[in-house]
Amino acid sequence: MQCSKNSAESNEKIMIVGPQLVDCEGVSPMKCMQVKAKESDNWEYFYGNIQGFNYESGYEYVIKVKVEEVKNPPADGSSQQYTLITQVSKTKK
Image (cartoon, rainbow, N blue to C red; front, side, top):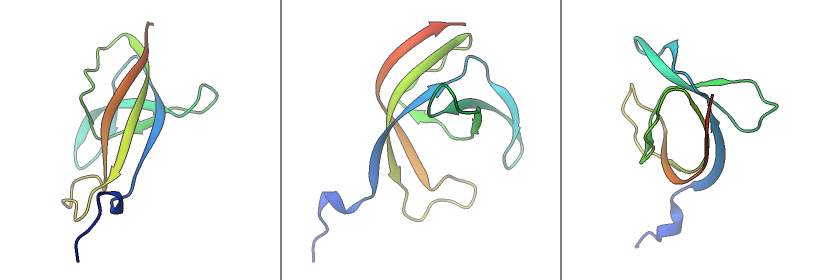
């Protein structure tokens, strides 16, 4: 039986990315982006990376990303893969 391309779980979402990397604790101490879904939300740490997104410190971004579930992720890896669809805005902060 052949799997269809639509069998993988994926969706699109808008993310606001903060202007500074911050110290965070993953498997070991690291620098994380801060993200939120809307302006009124609190910042959350983003431990992974976003394929195709070139982060530049000092700018706040609004981006649209595709989120896909990763089957059998590595023990130290995320179960979700983020890919940039489009950069909506980039504002100097």
